[in-house]
Length: 234
Image (cartoon, rainbow, N blue to C red; front, side, top):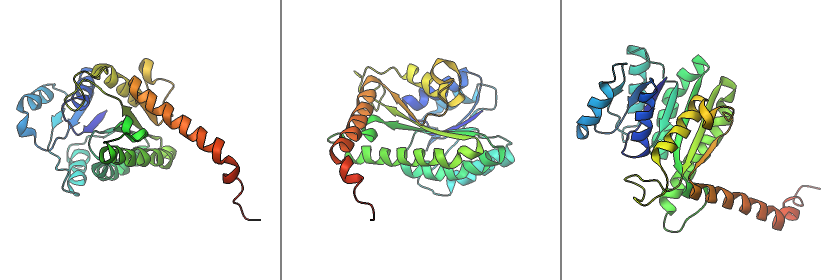
């Protein structure tokens, strides 16, 4: 298993360590590895070929070059892609890894998202709408690649105790990363038998957002169901 992931502190770092602890080969791709030499050393000291490489998210060709290097020169099959960055890089890296996944007829694409992408929250319009775009891409992608035995899902996170989240957040990054890992690998108590699902809500606050979406859709059909079914051509 190879995991190509942008690697900021928080969920990304916790997930990367969980991948290494479970014996998988990891390729972590931050913008500037020189800023975190201790983490580079930690990953590369693993001894299984794991590495920490630069990925400039502002260069639209960078992901393609990196994937060609890994899968061509280095002989690494990228079976699992974890994107912990934004919508634009999700599209770029996804396009780079999908050809190899289709050839092998196997792959998993994971997008780390947020509960504010599920349901609008005041003051989070830019961040929430960007994440919502990524959610929509993953939902569509999951249907497009299912015939190639490729899965795609997004983890919708609530407030966790990370640098980006609130220190007082009740979410435990270690438990969240186990759930993401289990679903990506279709194993463990959080993943086995749930492989077909595209949404993984994580956190009680994320569950609240998901329930709000369900209630909103039900309400829309209750109010406008007759209208929706009465606009067809005669």
